[in-house]
Length: 247
Image (cartoon, rainbow, N blue to C red; front, side, top):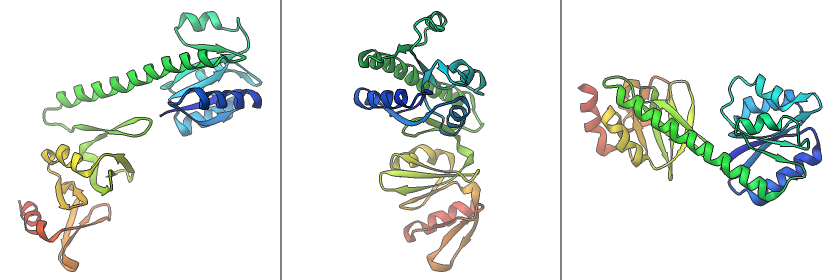
């Protein structure tokens, strides 16, 4: 699903567009709406949408004012306007889509399809850049791509403390205290990260040995990590892990 914000100073306009998106754009999830520039900027910063439906003329300024004040414009934009000549020449010249009010659902669908293609292209470009980065790091740290529902995050392998299985998902724990629940079984990530020294301590646990603080013999044995976490050790893996720690 592609996450989107609707920015329009009229309640009816926001509600109408949200309903049309829900009915005709199955790949779009509207995560918020805003009626003015300050609230729009706050939502953009906090929610980091992939797509904006942006009214050109607002009560306290224009959609262009919002874009000018955004630190980055990593999202796609579909302008929505009732003014046929208001900036449309510049919009056309920049190959950015717009739809006129009252909104035709077929034109809306066409504009959304174009935006989705651009968003997918950005994601593929990020993956490609990550591949090139990893290939250039002969002895340096690699980055792993972690797919979320609406984005991809690239994490340095050296910054991963541990992984924990949660059904068909895997939870990542990193040095900045962040936890990320990622689609994919632990087995998939074990195959990826074993070459980087990670060790399987238990059916549901996979650990970066660089963050192991101590081995505790009590309660059948477990590991204490530098971030304060404790990780169980299965009986079958204990000797293997102890040997790894000695090495």
